[in-house]
Amino acid sequence: MNFPEHYIRKLKSGDRKAFHALYFEMFPRLCAFANKYVNDREVSVDIVQDVFMHIWDHRTSIRSNTSFNSFLFVSVKNRSINYLRKEKSVAKLHQNYTDLNSETLFDYNQLELEVFAKVYDYIQSLPKRSREVMLLTLNGVSNDEIGSELMISVNTVKTLKKHSYRKMREKFKNLLYLIHPILIMLCNTIKDV
View (spheres, rainbow, N blue to C red):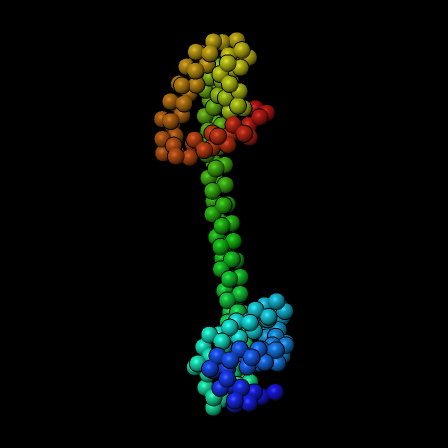
């Protein structure tokens, strides 16, 4: 159906009945047309509703001398193509982000493993009592429990830890910003050492 000129004039002047007549007549056909592009019924409905909202919002600028049906179909086609472009861009952006995130995560995990290995090697190189205190500390054991288990005073535990941490800070001063988070992680991971 091609809308008569007097309906277009009524639409331009804000006649809601003319708009509803246009909407109910053209909506199903325009949705089917949009669906041929986007292959998604819900998206097709959204596209057509957007076109009708645009028509209502800009009704005063509708030109009477053009085929209104053609205008509707071209508008739906353009919005469908824009939707597809946007979806492709979003998908590509998501893929790029995923790739970048994977590389960054891999780099961070590698760095974390290297620091972990250095810290573990450092702890293994400590004198026996200091090594035992540090490993128990990394296992989340309190100072009181360490003292009881090793049969030493709590003050000795604190002193051994203090000396070990000081040496660790000196040894790893260029990695100091990484040591603290990794020590926290070590507390949660080294359970069987």
